Amino acid sequence: MGTIFLERQFSPLDILVKNFFNTEEEFTTPNNRILNHPVDVYEDKDGLYFDIACTGLNKKQVDIKVEEDVLRVIYHKPDKDEKEDVHFYHSGVAKRNFNLGWKIARRFELAKIEASMKDGLLKLFIPLQPESKPKKVSIK
Image (cartoon, rainbow, N blue to C red; front, side, top):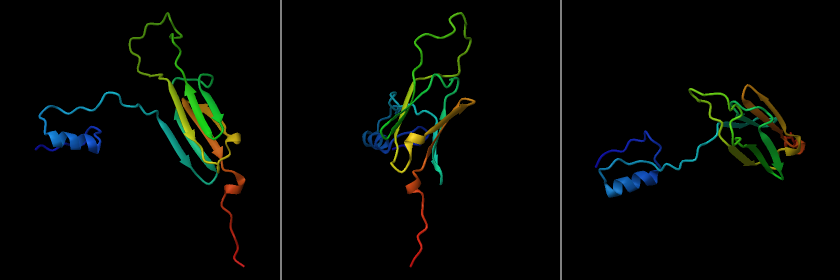
């Protein structure tokens, strides 16, 4: 039985099935992979931060919606290209649709969300609720 290297992203189940049937054919992963959008999410003592890649987009093309405790960031690619008279020799900047959503914990104040966009990077900041910040308790 041959060794399967994890160069490609195989799940443990994929490897188990491959080893169980011991097929000699090349083992390929399914083609319907979900493409993840480049996002950084981090937290510090002040609140929650999102850095979302929006290469080639401007702030009018991106929608930010807050529905109860869910934050959504949405971009829908137009059906037609905006520049009809332009012939592209190579198009390397992918402007794909995205609909990103996160359920935000109640300790963050979604009503005071701040958003800015610069150099193709959308930055969101959600502050902590004042009562959820750490408090020092003195012992009597």
